Image 1 (tube, chains in turn orange, green):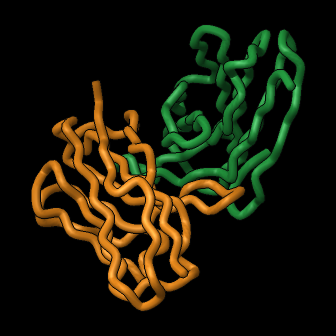
Image 2: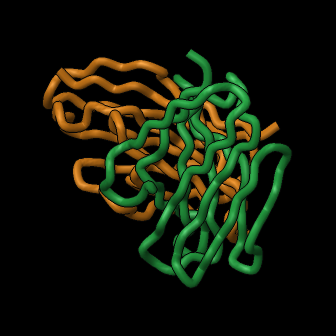
Length: 114
Length: 111
């Protein structure tokens, strides 16, 4: 079964602090994605990756960095967290070799910046 | 209907009723994904319809796609309490499964 695991599941951070959200997938998928979801809205793409060593900007990359050190792991980094980055963050993976196929999501990380 | 910056919509129906959720999209797509999100969980794909398919069925679910009007719909027949969830449509930006999500429809079945 496709598995995407995020950690931590909940995080409280202080304004100006550094936050790292981690994601691990056991699907052997080339592509991984980070989305954020704000209350009452759909998901928006922050960064994505085509494979180890690659990161690409999504639709709302400002204030975020990403790192893909291996096929399995993809991190989202907030160097200087701000209250506007309070949200629920979802990691996902997909088979980049085949277009228009299912994308598998993790359970999400709820981040609160105070 | 749901798309872009529109806020989450809400529907409340009784068990056994049929319901249809609509989605219109702004840019060309070759596929529309319909995802379901349960409380506290990530979205999960429930049906995917490609541009060469006008209709697709999966159990009590039926999706349609009209590329000329850039719209899609998801229907649930004889809704059950366990259908309570938020439903999203999403389009693929043409490659590598980068999804653009609509605002979603929160469906409540049963009190």
